[in-house]
Length: 584
Image (tube, rainbow, N blue to C red; front, side, top):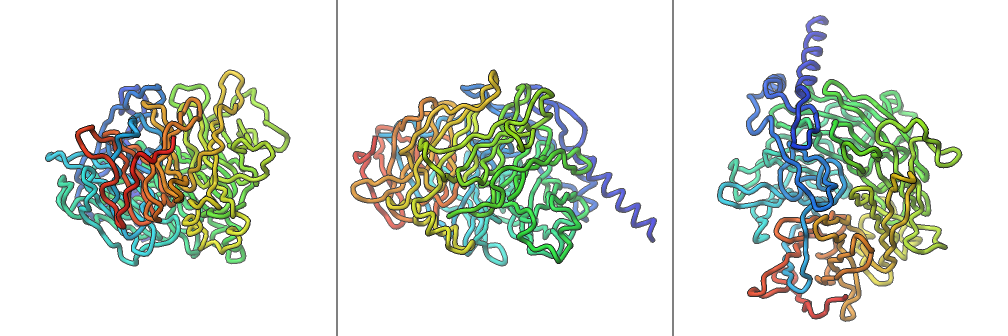
């Protein structure tokens, strides 16, 4: 029996190892990487006791040619549309080649109500009838999964998972794969949803998989939960749990099971299983994760930044680098230490490539870490710093006497440029006294003039001097709690902002010139909480649109033609602020 068990274990490992297939080109840029092997995926499904997977098992893709030439390699296993994952793709740069809103005086503002808060919005590919769906998972009491018509914003379907929702980051991050399946990590399960009628974007929602994390994917017996998730370019789903368990398994629902799951513990099995070590003494994950074209995975914890390699057979730690201010927190923070999902800077072929985060020092710093091998001639930037750190630059948003700054958002990256927004609310000293479980709700006050944070800063890496340089600061712009995005075509940074319009503290769409930092335009929506971005990612959609999740819904700003009435059309509660009140 023992030999039989060993044989089954080794066979399972071999099948999983082969799911990555062999090296081949998946895009016109000539980048060579593993692709999914259809035969081995069939074997993996059989190992899970399921029939052969359906759908596109070995997809290919072509990287979009962007105006600035800084588009990262496409991921063939993600939906090929405007936005299909947290921070747009596995590089987590949160920037786009699409234009977004370009004519501020011709804009329709549409809103649809949802009984929870969507953080990440993903666009499906259009079906044979040219219908497109917007998918989102949500955080909040219901934890519902929703599907919205991308053209009309009318609800298509909602799915209420068993057990309801959460008020944590678990369930916030998701992605839409090439088969138009929404993959979500929620609490202790990896869930997959799809069209009730495959290929019909207007059909209902069906749950295709619900893999409860097995014991090997949890940190001992602690109350672990899924947090970060991304799609590896070889077709595997990668995830990270609150207590640092990193897992990889095939994306096909039929091949998702404990037998095809590989895991790696950042805290180590010994620490996870040691009851004398409290939860607070373990490294925790509170952000999503990213991955490069080689399927290396990047995870930031409350203490350090990690690179975990996936070679198609097993997970292994390539490097770990600590950063300053580990474990620190503040008002609105969802965890200790860095508030940023690791963003990957640089493209294949670039000499300098980095992992980009913000740290946890009282005065936050932008931190660039060498993603691959550290240059042989590189010296630590200062005594005591890890040699992997290439740049550590204070982010003061133009206030040279500042002693505090904070951001709960990932760093917007394009080329060698980084853009950071300020989330340090004016009432931080008071609000930070609230217990951790109440911190997310402090964002409901973040748009008030007495409390709203202000500041946006661009910092670039200079490959000639090999240093970071401040490019510009906009000290007055306020992006209270949303993740900014940037259009390579229009050269605008977009974010959900707050301004006082006609005496009301109003939520807005802000556009800032990427080159100069000057405010380009501001489009007001309403003062209602239903337009509060509440941690959501600002998303550039198709057809000159910018989208955002809100506290109880989803809002779209979209250019309209002159022969149509422009202005807010759908809102509950309804309100219309004339575009004549635009703030320049």
